[in-house]
Length: 497
Image 1 (tube, rainbow, N blue to C red):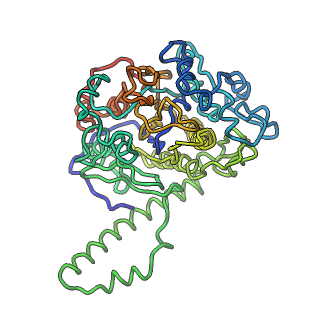
Image 2: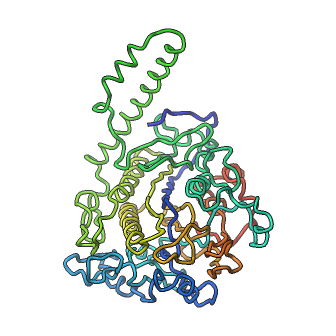
């Protein structure tokens, strides 16, 4: 656990509760095969999607939504019968996820929201269900861009491009910082907000930002004067059984002279602070798990209790490869931490998790299918937990990624690109937002000859809408996201409720 650093500012005071769950699809999610464009427009719709991608990786025009809706039970929840695998719309009859991945999609056809302009990959029935229920929004063509630029402008002045465009580490970092131009100040948009709000929760232990990533540092949460709490994907852990005796001896027996003594006292102080925080949070975790049990009655789409039973097996899901259980567990842990925050009277928390493995240059149908299947299961566990307690209007599940993938196929996969779709679930105005891009390889929105689409919505605009809902003022948002001021106010991005 990181040492605590208090901000000098008192922060804003709120009477309500809100939470953000940041979901990093790390490696560059193939947005076009997650949210398939199904409109009739010749440039932005399904016909051009299949033309540019080719039959090798384009999802077939087979709408499975009616099958999915037939699985909604009398309580209004999606429910699979594992003994009748043929009833699962994404399952094609064989234990082969690559075939299920290419079976079709769930067309979001509500004329008041998505209006048949987009569909969800067959491997994500749970996500499709929540979108169909009006609990989600899809934001088109989001990416790292510092101002609205045309292809001509970008070609004429390459210095206005984001640094190291198409490089995973740089683009993922920029997406976390909320800026597309500069990495000189490595503070993230949520960290900057935490700096301004100070001790917003008025709690001696719990800060606003909590990182659940087991795969790396979530830069979005680091400010100049604040750092996130850092937990395992399984939640807070006790230190009583994890203290290294050799380390303890080393701290206590180090020579007490000059700088060594100063260092030893600093280490002791930090260990004492970390120990105190860990003890409190671990006890809160025990209470939620063993006494309160707020989600014990919640079941998943397979009828399994999400916090008591094992996750669906490979056979039940019609898959040859197991999904990443750490990802699903991270979503479950996020739900429990929100329950703790509610119980303790906290006002604002943000949580971050990483869903890794989205760099599919090859074997897209085999590998991408497993990644998005695990993501969909994790989302479903979290959303069902929030729905069970009536908290869906108090949370926002917010996706990000390094970048999307190339419109053009490389034969068996897709390559690094730029703009792509993102999603927000929970407290949203359901529907499509932003501008559908021209998918033509070499076209007006392709910065290359591979179908690397220039974003039309910046991460700063996207995050700005989240922070408006979260309760930040315009000046606080501009401080956290300085490039937002480069974009005109838009009415097509009002996706937060």
